[in-house]
Image 1 (tube, rainbow, N blue to C red):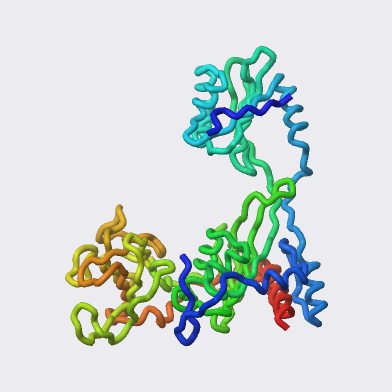
Image 2: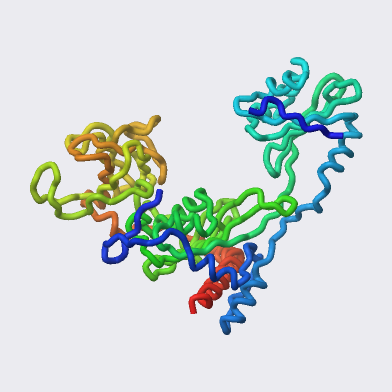
Length: 458
């Protein structure tokens, strides 16, 4: 009988419409709450589906039928207690005890509180990779302890993750440990929404986690400025991985396809792993979603001053503004918008703490008024696109914390909000056929969802 003993229990930016006025809107996607109840779209996507046509009723029916589970070969679920008992008989377990990890607990403290001697604790902690993995245990987790008829510990089981457990079995006077990986069932699920007040609120109402919202922003961040471009009525659809164990969803995975309609322009992206094993997001025509430069160097900030002639707040006169100012809290991370090399880093007059990065022979970007710099970098350091180079501040000629960002072509200042950035390499011609075959089911799924939701709007 297994007795359970508990040891020591103890960015959302306001949305402007095209007129620049702030709408007074309710949060959420109310239409989804009412309409999706009438159309059984489900939450699980098929591995492949041809685009559908016809009446709204046929669209609904075919969309519903297409949403099936994609299994990756999860074995039939077995009863945990019977499986454990069978294993226990083989390892000589006569009695089970379960201890629960509390905040501040270590494995040694837990086991000693359960009456296990220090020598045994040391043998478990030093049992290779499995022992090292036990140095990171989490509050609320259970550890199963198996004792023989004499009360000696002969088995320890710890569920490290939904698809991974750590097992220790006594072999004579020592313990052997192993990390056991268990297969999960992979399904494709979808979420879709219309922006009424903010992207974060719409995505959260659609059931997307914060991590996935940020992934969506990164995918389309080269084409859409999520500070300026988002408008009420913009739409998004996301197809993403979800992993199940014995019928329960245990975690979500990556976005495999997505669509974002911004100001009437539809952007699509699909996830593709090439023949070399590298994974990127591409448009269906094979062009990379990744551009040579990010659209913005800080995430979800507010633009306080644009490119062009303006009244300078500290000089008190009209003057050309050669960049864009992003108002953000002091300490907000600043990211290099492209791959390049730092050519200036230090105090620079009215710019305050300043960084200049050169990107090849034509392009350079400048970042001013920094509070401080990222550690480990200096003049001459190579930086990658998206790498943190410093933090927002208010040094130099500044009236408050913000980033002044400049984009230069051959030394001339250009407006980074309207600049057309060059793309990186597309899918090579020799891999085009493989790419088209791989993405066809995902494009078909987006088409199916488009038609289904269009039918709802009629």
